[in-house]
Length: 336
Image (cartoon, rainbow, N blue to C red; front, side, top):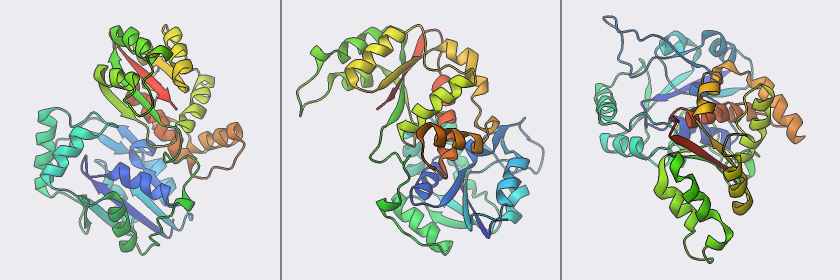
């Protein structure tokens, strides 16, 4: 197994995903279990079972395979599950991200990569769990109300790792200083309004607000952000197309083409037809990270160690984009 495996866990809103992204940005090997190992099982509500707010489980074969590898020297695993206790012997230390109630409320309301926690009953459940202090035995609490850089510095200190925070270690697929990928879920009837706001004659002079983004913001029901460079999504789209998952075409291709031309990026419109056809197939745990990495490296003609997890995140991003769509709701996917 890796010389040192560290588990970073916590409740929704505690910052597991952000820690995962920052660890990779700093050059460390990290795994987001929601992307790499997670699957859903029937809830276990038997007597004496610990409290869990979802029915996620870690795939044992995938988890053990990663945790028993001799490399890397240090591995950070970010996430939690109902069956986490099964894997605790594999970890050198366990870190529990702790936040106060006000921070939890704010983060659940503001986050854009997960819709869980938007409803009042979900918030109350999270607050109740936060006060229950349920965590693995021996876990080390880390104050996750601090700025992200400080939280990761503290985790690295506790793990006896170097706390380098230099942009020289940025991966090529880092979100910083790169193309952005995001989806805007809107009413289908709002598409003509958004298209009209994007036309060149509607552009606003430099230094003032951009009418396109103003209109899109007003029409948006929910927004989903991708954590890595939009160029990873641009690589993933043709890969998925080769697997029979076509997210690049719809009945609104004319609108998408107009938006792409006037906004200078790549724009796609996703519909309920995509949801019906492909949602069940966009399960990150069903994809092989090594295969995704090889495709990325061949497509971009560059070595890309670690990009497999960014690709798996991209599959989850597409899944989360399709999930809320119905006959009257579409998603505008923008890469640029």
